[in-house]
Image (cartoon, rainbow, N blue to C red; front, side, top):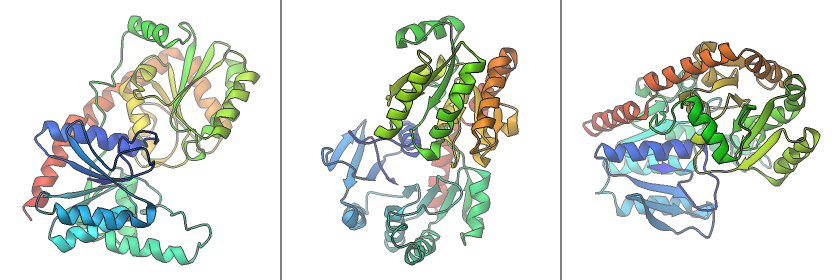
Length: 379
């Protein structure tokens, strides 16, 4: 499996990487042997290691990543039956190209909507010339034997970008419902006590990276108004981010004393989701967001921006509240509506948990991926 990062000490794990780790764990439970080739982001991490029975190779620096990945694939070509590219970047393009040369089937999982291949670091200094690079990336990536589209939006975008419609497989992200599930009121109180959170407050949880794409700035703008309308509301922020974002959060805490708790990045968000009343997700761009899916599985009343992936997860508002993206006032109204109507919020949370368990359980998703592997290997 080829991806942008994998459980690297000192590096931030993205939602796509965490989703890949969850999938790998369940693939191995189904008898699949997995080797990971991932980008190396820090010098402290080893170039090669075993993580929970998975052989992990890390490649870098940027100029050498593709060559190193190609060398690993070539050396171990008899070991692999499938090359699974998890996400869209140049490393994956190189892997798809080499897989074709080796006669191995390849599978491209498209994890972000709105653009098939993400922008590169060269786009700002060379915006026009590097459009050619992205077009070339798309041209080469189309040669994958099959493409996984995690959302309907992505499934519709791929043919417009020149990808072969007959190779598209609709397969959503999955959630581990053994970890992410609702808890009783008594357990929720115990979790709050153990985590040092207020036991009687209405907890509004943000659990994502503190970056503009995740809409963190919108939450900062909306929170004072939310707090003024609901005195017992308490904001809990879980996730890492740049120093400027952490500083802005500290200033928000000063503006609303005692109403904000910053946790930072954690290995397991499940306890925080299980003790939250409202989960807020103001993202500006997603595929099929893992954070929202995990919140649904835990029975949170969810307020999310009206991105197509969020609409798909929340069943067009039947399992949560959708608000206009990039609009702090709309975010405020959505969160306040859930805080003001606890019976409705509880019903939406229950519907969300039922939908997550019935339609997105990782055990079912992993079996479908295994079936896809077997079908590709027979071609």
